[in-house]
Amino acid sequence: MEDRQIVILDFGSQTTQLIARRIREMGVRTEIFAFNTPVTEIRKHHPFGVILSGSPFFPWQTGAPKPDPQVFTINVPILGLCYGLYLLTENLGGKVWELQNKEYGMANLKIGKSEKLFAGLPREFTVWMSHGGEARNLEDKGIKILASTENTKIAAFHHPDKKFWALQFHPEVMHTEHGKSILSNFVFQICDASKNWKIENWIQDKIAQIKETIGDKKAICAISGGVDSTTSAILVGKAIGRNLTSIFVKTGLMRLYESDEVTTALKKLGLKLRVVEAQERFLTKLAGVTDPEEKRKIIGREYIAIFEEEANKIKNVEFLVQGTIYSDRIESQRAQSLGTASKIKTHHNVGGLPADMKLKLVEPLSEIFKDEVRYVARKLGLSEEIAGRHPFPGPGLAIQIIGEVTEEKLDILKRSDAIVVDEIRKAGLYDKIGEIFANFVGVKTAGVKGDARAYQWLIAIRSVDPSDLMTCDWSRIPYDVLAKISRRITNEVHEVNRVVYDITQKPPGTIRWE
Image 1 (cartoon, rainbow, N blue to C red):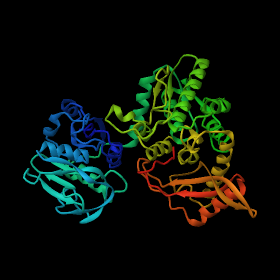
Image 2 (image 1 turned 45 degrees about the vertical axis):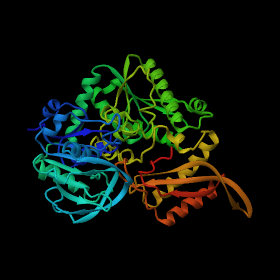
Image 3 (image 1 turned 180 degrees about the vertical axis):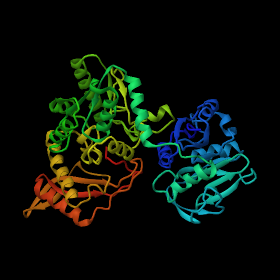
Image 4 (image 1 turned 135 degrees about the vertical axis):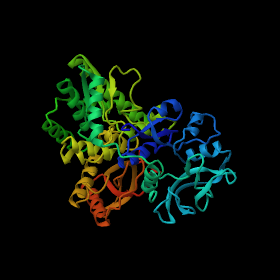
């Protein structure tokens, strides 16, 4: 049956969409549903199996999400991950205890009984833990303990009669060794799923969906020249043709020379394009603002105000197209509609939008991740210049400046950031890392220039390796390249006397500092 799929119930984990993404990579159709979706609705999708996601809650907490009780009798394999393990534990009559010493980060997993879930895997490997509880009182409930760690006796279990499998760790994140193999074993060895999904089919389905949503109405697209917004414009353009107008706003918050470069690149695509000069407008609104959340919201509101003004000039525009991707939605708590994800930060084009916005939103990419967007972009024929461009946040350099945004700080940051990217390109590393950028930290440090004391600004460099952007590792940039970057910044950007490099993973840090 073509529409059969793996059903994922989302209880609010930051990594729920990664589960779906890993399964789509296997070529199997999958869909995420709200945690309390009735089993009658789930059955309509003829699931190969069901996965219960993680959650920021413990089961006993007020407001903890609970599924339809009938899900436990659905008679297809069920895999519980972290919080999902807790739910299966309670259903079996076991107990979930809060640990004094919670377990976050890497742990060494020891396989006791491999069975199908761990088939073909080593007896020991590293997994990513993120939990503060433990399953207990299960030994007499008919389960088989499959694996443990130093701090967690039941790190994986299987209940043969009920078709329950459960993991205390997260196989979907890149930090878990053999995580993809574990999920693959569940999907193919346990659920006996068939390959029935391709990204090419998603593209055609999405174009048809956009066509149905917008019809013969007009739309504008907020476009920045990045891969997300440009891919969105191309997708919507294929659906509604010349009824789409793309709008590029010069905020003054772009990188050095970027506004002109982007405008040139977009015109080559044949898009119907409007360019709005708004540098002074944004800087005026941001004057005196230091809180990062407030900066994002101000920028979001100002963008929408400009788009609505431009829509009125075009007339009969009802829709606003944005390049929002799934990681934006998760971190902005838009995933609340599917679960109870904890808010990390507001993205200007998500949580920063005004409640009274007149235009209706169309977000073609809101269910896929950055690397999937790049794949779609290449399938649509976009140049590598756009498809491979490093991510750049909608609020721009405003969230790479800690504290108030001023023209002076922007100027220093733009010149520093340009040097960073230039040296990375010269070293042949641009396409090998996920992204790299400079931060204006807002701190002065003591230094020496020309035998004199120099009390000047600090610049921090941040780079992460290619990943799903929900989790990522810092890039191991060669020391000689970092040395060149530091020398050039301190020599050419006269207001700076110190450069540091950020070596924090995500989590615990986010990619950007604000």
